[in-house]
Every structure is written in C-alpha cells, then in structure tokens.
Amino acid sequence: MDTGQMIADTIERLVAERGTNPRAVALAAGMSPTGVRDIITRKTKNPTFANLQKIAEVLGVEVTEIIGGTSAERPPIAIAGKVGAGAQVPVFDAYEKGDGPQVECPPGIPPHGVVAVEVEGDSMEPVYSAGDLLFYTRNGHDSVPSDVIGHRCVCEDADGMGWVKQVKAGDEPGLFHLISLNPGANTMWNVKLNWAARVRLHWPADLARKK
Image (tube, rainbow, N blue to C red):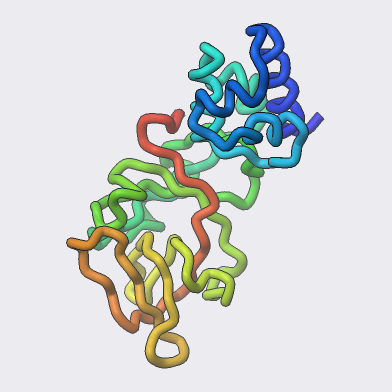
C-alpha cells in the first residue's frame, strides 16, 4: 500500500470513529467542503502537510497518527544547508556530505532525489520565514528549465550563492530577475543562474521534525 492510500484510510477510520463526516471535518479545518473527501477517495493524491496538520487538529490526534509509520519506513532527507531570502548565503557547501542535519521525509514526497534547504533572511515574507524548510528536486546539474519561470524557486547564481526567489525571465537570454515577495526587500535584476528548481514543498520551521 502506498503512502497516500495509508493516509486516506487512516483519515477515513478516524472520521468514522468520531461519528462525524468528511464535509464537517473539512469545514472545521478551514478547507473546501470536499477537501477531506477528496483525500479519502484519492482525488487528491498528495495532500499537503499543512492540510494534514489541520485535519489532525480537528480530529484530536497528532499528525503523526495520520501519516502513520510511513516516516519511519522511509529514509530521512538531508538538509543541504541554508538558502538566502535576502541574505547572501553560499548554501550548498554548508555541510560536508552526510554530516548535516536531516529531516523526516514529508508525506507525498519521494525520499530519493529530493533536497531540503533552510531559509535565511526575510525577503520572501510572509510566504517563507527564516528557519523554514524548502524541498526541491533538480532536473539537471546546470539548467534553468522553462517551467520554473514565474515560480518560487531554489536557485544558485554564477557566484555560487543560493537563493529562494520568484524567477522571471531577464532582459536578455540567459539572464533572470529574482523577485522578492516582501515589498521592503530588494529584487535582483538580470542575474545569471547556474540552475534553478521549483519549490516542491514548504515546511514551516515549527512543523519540521529534524533528526
């Protein structure tokens, strides 16, 4: 049984045990009326950790009960280092390989080929805060795929500095604008990037379980 099905079955069981229904749980969790039902029926195959946390609170359990033993069965993800959100950080050499901290693999994320980095700085407030973890997968060692344009990305510039920014096309081919979401932070114009990868998952600092 895959992780998504185990989560769906656990939520369905907990809802039934409490004598309620998926719609009532979804509304109490601040989700759409069909949000919980969509998870149970697998229409939503990869529910976010934030939604699972809200569902757990409504059902009166720890979120670990919903994700079950899956995290223990899956290898943890290494935290590669820090990524700048306003601060200049040479992120990717922060730790010797294998020596850095690790975080348990979130539900819905494959444990292989995924990297985590920790946010430093406040240029992406209020979306990403210092200490939050971002998970991403690089499609190539030296590439900026077209599908990252317009999205929030982890990226490395030509000077080896790591950033989390919204990436937009620059004024010339091969150059990119790195947009800050915080109105008080500076946007970086026409930057050359070694690579960029879209953020797949954001885990707030107080939810991440570091090892």
